[in-house]
Image (cartoon, rainbow, N blue to C red; front, top):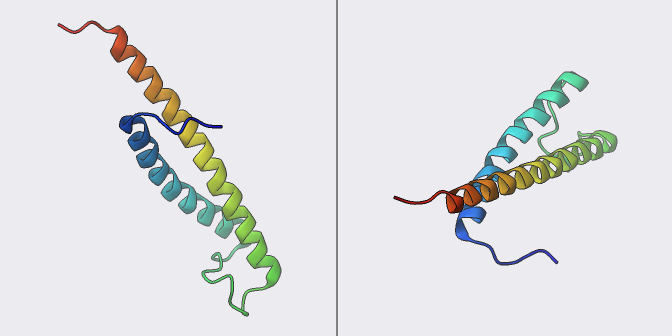
Length: 94
């Protein structure tokens, strides 16, 4: 089970990095979808004007893309924060 504790700084860094990654990932996925299909992604996947295949395809691409971005950013942010924290603790204060 993951550690539920942790300090505020680590959580704040992860939250900010996650928000930025979500924005960038969403824009990247929309750009890639447009390039690959030649049309804008469906804005309303529940609309009967959007085919079932297109709606499901977009949902899968968006879900996988956002999840991958979240995993990469959270792990990178934690690794960087832990390294910074260790360096700060190892450096003597004047």
